[in-house]
Length: 255
View 1 (cartoon, rainbow, N blue to C red):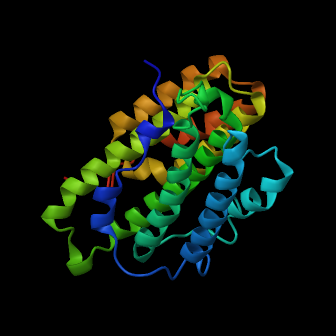
View 2: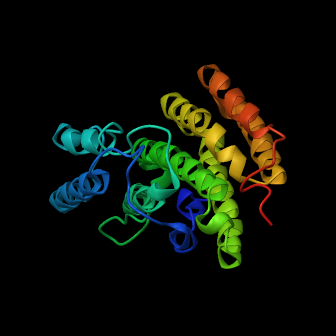
C-alpha cells in the first residue's frame, strides 16, 4: 500500500518532552508569531475557497501572498545553526507545515469522497514537504546540540526513550518524502524541489539516525532515481552521501 506523507510526521508528543527554553539563535525573530499569522490568513483563504469546493491553490493569484509568506524562510526559519533552546519553537513551525498537509490530504469533494489528493494537490504537498524536511533538519541540528550539551551533563533516562522514538519518526518522515520522489506521476519540477530539500537537510538529519536507518534511506533514495529526472540526481547523490556517513556519535550513539 502506498504510504501517505501524513503518516510520516515527526512524533510531536515525544519531541515536546525534549523542548527547553526560547528561540535565541537560528530562528528568525518572532518566527512563531509569523507562522501563526500566516496560518490564520491561510484559514481565511481556505474558508473563502470552500465555496468553490477547493482548498487554496498555489496557482491562484489571490493565494500568492499567503503562500509567499508561508514559504518565507528568512522570516520564519531563519538560518543555521540551531541550538537546543530552539527545539520548542522549531516544533511549532514544523507543526504549522504538517497541519496544512492535512488540509490537502484530507480534502473531500462535495459528495464527501476523498479524491486522488496526493496527486491532485502535488504542487502544494511538495512545497509543504520541502518545508517539513528543512525544518526537520533544523530540529535535528537542535537535538544534536541538546545531546552534546544536556542540562546537568547527561541526558536523563526518561528522555532517552523519547529520543529513540524521535529517530524512528525522522526516518519515517524522510522515507515518506522519498516515496513522493518515487511516484511516477509527480512532476519533474516537484521532484527537483523535494530532492534539493533532502540534500539540504541530509547533513543535519544523518547524525541523529542509526546507521541501519541511514542505509535504508540511502537505498530508497537510490531506487528513487528510476523515477526522478536527471536534474534531481546530484541532489539525491548529495543526500545519499550524507546518509552513507559511518560516524555514530551524539544521538546516534545514545543508548
